[in-house]
Amino acid sequence: MKQNAYNLLNELKIKYDKVEHPAIFTCEEGREYRAGLDVTFAKNLFIHDKKKIQYYLVILPSYKQADLYRLRDILESPTRISFGSEEDLMEKLGATKGSVSLLNLSNVEKPDVIVVIDNEFLSKPTIGFHPNVNTETVMFSSSEIPKILEHKGAEWKRIEF
Image (cartoon, rainbow, N blue to C red; front, side):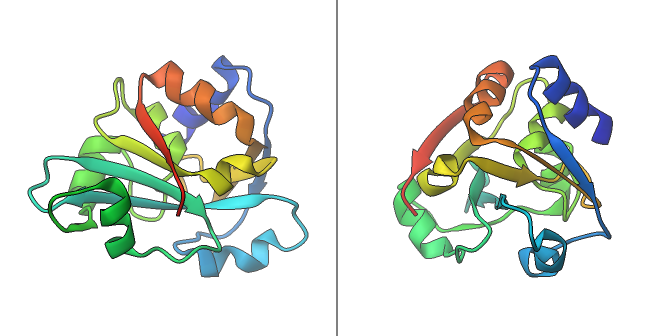
């Protein structure tokens, strides 16, 4: 699966840098490996509505607190939202726990999730994501995000979080 992410970046001619590190499961765990890098790293949330009709991949800067009640309001969900299961994550994005990221789109033909990205994250010059594994981080220009989303035919929207 890792190779899918790199294949996508290379196919779209996206220039990136890569850092290898021990497995990171939370933004807190990754802080020591990010020290000194002028990069905004992503906090990625895989969530769904109560009836599991709509799934979302929410992308925020790693320093922001994830508030599901606020997200529910922003997404205008008629029901509560919650985190997706590992089984749903594998089915929808071909990903495993700890490796949720925008680059999971490389694992699926046509994404069946809505990608929701914080405007502040999109405004950062350089951003970082796991490439389908949580032992590496790739960093590239945030201006490349729309190219990835359009190429994969993903429905997406920008939010103020």
